[in-house]
Length: 160
Image (tube, rainbow, N blue to C red; front, side, top):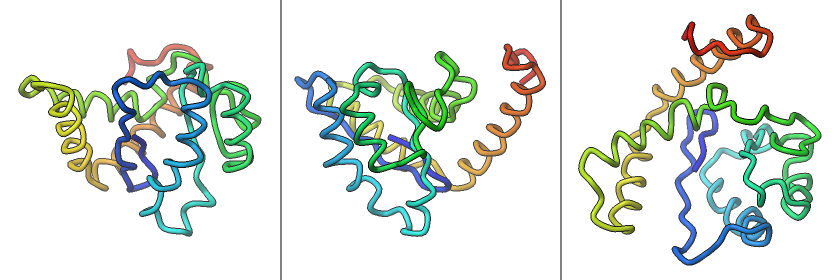
């Protein structure tokens, strides 16, 4: 799942028995990600800056090679030529400081009965994220970046 400007990139669920390895993640980048970005306006695509976390599959040479081809100098993560995102920095990552908490609150309003129910609840919750909400997330991100700069990269959660 992701966010891009005013768009929510729908969640993708790997089959239950699949381990996320460098190969499976790279296949996702090549085969699935373009499909997930299908509804994004063509004018936005060249400006995408792809950000990922530090999962070992994400930082594999195979994945980095694909990211360098698809998003040259436009991806953030471990070994990125653009920016190595600071590890354990959820306060600067909209997926962490907004999306996952929002989804969790929606999903666990009542406990999911099984994996399929959980997936359905996640999909429904993601569809409820509006462009107005995403605009506020961007404003919040800019505030967080300014606070981080004021604290010279140190902790700033106490002033949020």
